[in-house]
Image (cartoon, rainbow, N blue to C red; front, top):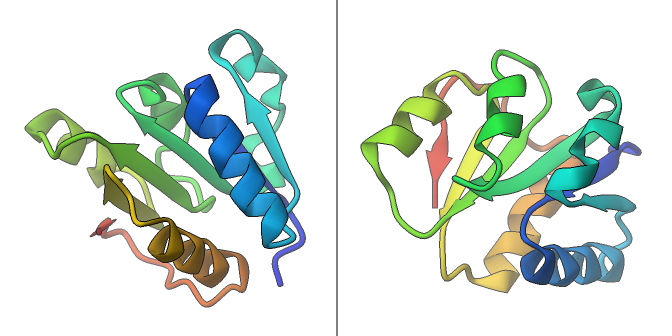
Amino acid sequence: MNNKKILVFDEESFARICHALLLLDGYPSDCLAKRDIEQAGALDDYGLVITSFPYGSGLISRLMHRQTPVVVLSDCLSGELLECLKGIRNSLCMVKPIDYEQFRGKIRNVMSSDWSDSDVCEIV
């Protein structure tokens, strides 16, 4: 299992839900708000980053061409989002409302290293 923490960077209400789901499955996580994102430190120290679009677009741009897997949540698919996802390796995009069981399953796959190293974004 990937022992690194998960970074959750999203609006407070979803970040709390996500953090609770991650704890339920035994994953340590840091939940950060916009004002705290600079405290995230080295992004490579995280085994996974979870954020939403457009809320986390600044963070997403910092993750371009890195190895850290990224789960991006969005209300809809747009050209802007798809363009943004092109530069992110190992990314997964889930359209809201998300199925929490499916979400938890995807997180398990990523954190168990059962995740393919890919330049293509998987859209769920």
